[in-house]
Amino acid sequence: MFVRSLRTASLKAPARLLPARVSLVTPLRHYSKFSPERRKASKKAKQSSEESSEEKPKKTDAVKSAKGYMLGALALLVIASTIGASVYTTHDPRSAPEPTLPAQAPEETKSKDEKKAAAPAFSDKDVSVIFVLGGPGSGKGTQCGKLVEEKGFVHLSAGDLLRAEQVREGSSDGALIAKCIREGTIVPQEVTVRLLRNAVSDNVAQGNNKFLVDGFPRKMDQALTFEDEIVKSAFTLFFECKEQVMLDRLLERGKTSGRADDNIESIKKRFRTFIETSMPVVDYFDKQGKVVKLSCDQPVDVVFGKVKEALVNRGIN
Image (cartoon, rainbow, N blue to C red; front, top):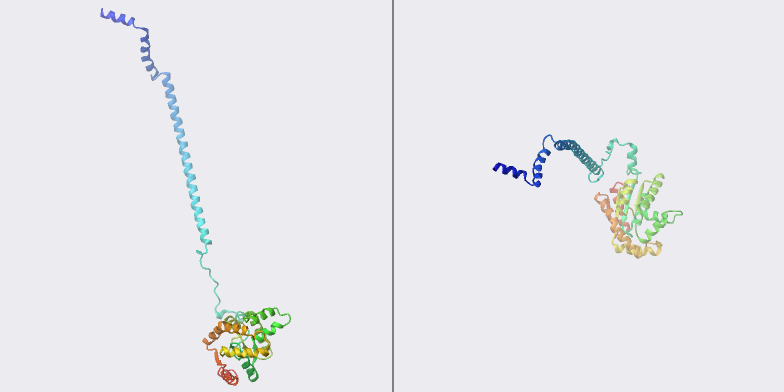
């Protein structure tokens, strides 16, 4: 009776319950190992796995390639930096090595021509030159005139040579010399040294070999150039005199000399120039024991006696 009621109930079950039974069977069939859906899903998974395995080496190669480019670029950067540092070091004067000067030949290995070129034009054994220095109006010219008369010296006055060159027709230095004399300044040494060299050469050619160079050198560069290029001086006569005494002498001389520099303004400039530029020359030769100092406040003949005595003591007759 109970069994029959179950059957009756199952037979009488509503049609809406049937889809529930079907829904239980369908999933099993869909995921069955041998179902078409399963085979398709498996095939797709396999293909996806193969594609993934193919892409992986490609990505690895790309990474390796990128690393290679980076390493190459880094290497180039290092090389460029090294070259740049090398170039900078080469051209940087602070880091450049000191230049090596060519070794000069020892004195004994120099040729005769080289020694001749470096030597003065005349030997001091053959030509005697006495520099005569002193302030303007100290009496240099007067004492030189007496030595010319008694001892046969050639008197070369730098001032006289310059004044003669100033008025010489066609002189290229005339205007410059006139300006320097007028203003009481020193004529450029190349002009004065050239005139003295020509005068010494002309007189030596005539057999004269004793010279009084009056009023020269007035600067150190003149002294050094003369001794390097012409001849070494024997010694220097330095006439000392008080400034007021010299001023009075020059003003008196200016009344009849007609010289453009014998005026009060030029005289004072000449005093200053002598003290500033010529006294260092006197000091330079004095340290070498080549200066004879004579006071010019005494009578002319007394001073001249001392001049002759100085010549004898120096071996010049």
